[in-house]
Image (tube, rainbow over all chains, first blue to last red; front, side, top):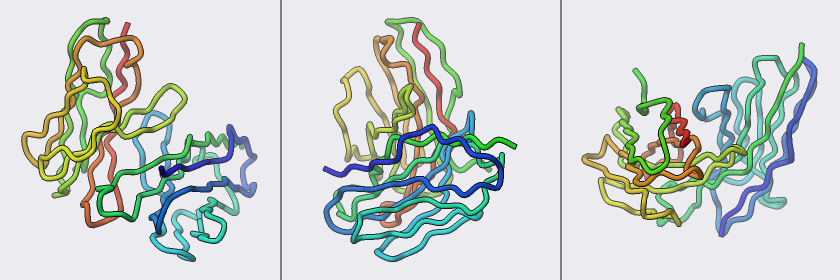
Length: 115
Length: 112
């Protein structure tokens, strides 16, 4: 079955530091890949997505590139802010028609950014 | 306008009770989902409905029963609540032909 593995957290950074959260996946075919973010006390929001190999998703200074050869979708940001403190989830959506949009999530990575 | 809305946001109840969580989406999507987030933040799908038809039913106790009266609504009824049911339950919706799912704010269920 499909699976997503994220780097262990929590991650603690100082403001303006560089962020990388690793994500690797196991799936058949060509899944779509996502990063969702959950701010404290809120629901999940889509941060960025990529639907095919070599696509780069980007939003709010965050980027991730779909690497089929390494089955990875690492999240990066050049300079984090305190407001980026949240839980980040990597997820995949099976390419098969029978998945009906089911998302398989990684375990989530808690990010805390200090001033 | 809230795209996916759940009620209630918080639910505290005693073991053995029956409770329902309601979800509505105004995005015109044809597929809706329930996900469970445990205390370690892990998210796992429970159910999915496409055009009011149950299409995904993961290994969930049959005390959990989803109901979809129409495409815009998906409710979750839980019978005989147990301590282990305490979690955050998220409703989501998407268009099955598209890739992006939109999530509600979550319902934090606490069973005491």
